[in-house]
Amino acid sequence: MRLRTVEYLAGSLLVCAVLMGSNQVSASELRDGDASPAKKEDASPAKKEHGGELPHWSYEGDEGPEKWGDLSPAYLVCGVGVQQSPIDLKDGIGADVGKIRINYRSTSLNVINNGHTIQVNVDPGSYITLDGKRFNLLQYHFHHKSEHLVSGKAYELEVHFVHAANDGALAVLGVLAKRGAKNNALAPVWSIMPRAKGEASGGVVSPINLLPNNKSFFRYRGSLTTPPCSQKVIWTMFRTPVEMSGAQIDRFSSIFPNNARPV
Image (cartoon, rainbow, N blue to C red; front, side, top):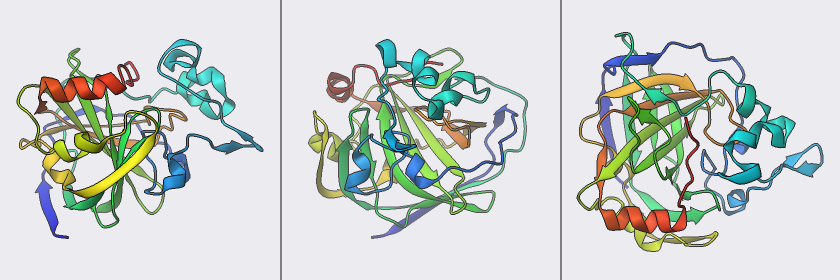
């Protein structure tokens, strides 16, 4: 498969100048819509904690975002963390936030409904480099509506491209989507995405085609947006949204009416 490489200089603004902790996160912690290695068994939300399964979480009710930190000691940072994502992206202090180089290959299409989102696991070989450090693309997934806001504005959908470095560091590219023309890059995924928990496969998809043409971005350090809410993520949020048709938005929202953590 052909490797497409694009390189972008510094984003125009640094949103949030917070320090990243030194702790790292393992690939097994990346699950349920924030990341998951491309294996069938990892589609299950169950994970062992001191001999038991971590509790189920949701986007509403007693297992919703306001309660995540109370569901398990493993989720505590969801409630008390001070570098939590998402955030309201606003123009901050102008700063050189470095260089991003995107190297994405076409990948065989493997789509999972894991009960929290629609997730596309990708073949090995796609990666980004941030200031010279390589982060391998694991998967991308979708949230409705957007999790991040831009100056208080929410968008129809948000796509997260989840990457991990060999040392466990995490980086996510975020793409916002607004209502407009049909997005042909989404068509292969939308045509086979399962309505119930499960997976489907077939065909080839090019993740790079989901990125906006204008690559200016916000950059900040934050967290996973699902439990365990680990505060170990370098976020790069593209400022310019892509378009999706109303039918595409409605198809996703009919499966997940709300799978977005609020700001």
